Image 1 (cartoon, rainbow, N blue to C red):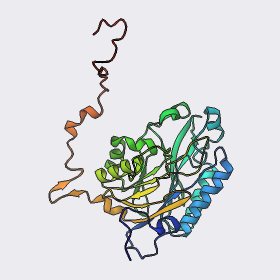
Image 2: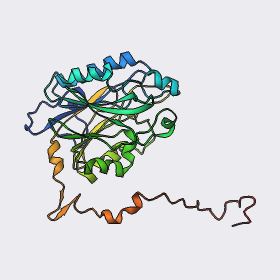
Image 3: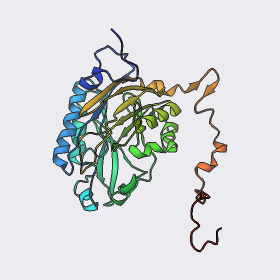
Image 4: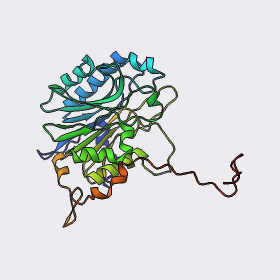
Length: 320
């Protein structure tokens, strides 16, 4: 019988956790792709808590939920966003903590619409275990019209010490900024949990979703596991990529969920991320040259757009 290709989903990815035994040093990761209902805060609270409980009962040590899993994504305006925003100490996240208590050491990272202490609304992710909320991260890089709804975060990704290793989190578009993932790596992260809502877009036949490609690059560059949990369903004409995946520290996809409501399962040794040797003499962090990277934090240089020779000359420029 032929074996599935290493980067292809297996039946176990969609139907349940791997049945094979695992070393005691690994964590069983469940990336739960589900369909939040837009503006249904009570219903989404039940759905997400039930999803965490189901994954934990099936053996998950680390559960990752999608971006804005408590509210839905396609919010029309600030009034809608505020109507489904909850503080970090809300009963919604308490439900996640209760689900984690079903298994010692279980952790969940999930996206929620947060009402901050100052009354501002954020696109946030919480790291939660049986003791409660361990950390909250507010999305720093807001995608497109998100900036009309949310206040961006202004703090670095948190790194939380858990029973399985050090877990950090970004949200969706944040992963497009290599500096931000590297910030988590330098702070000691072993696993980067990334709740996402990837809108469906065109891609060449046979290619992976571009979000997965970015996740693979981040994992490879930082030598840490990256878990991206996308969503499914439909909202106000928007369809989703359904690109949920677990990527190992070597940059290769270990599992993916595929279409519909599904879970990508993978056994990951988080502490193995800490061995960042490259070849016999190299080291991914030790070989950095920070003294050469000043341009990363320098003001952006705005270059004039190059004009094609056949383009019409704008009126009043004199041809210059």
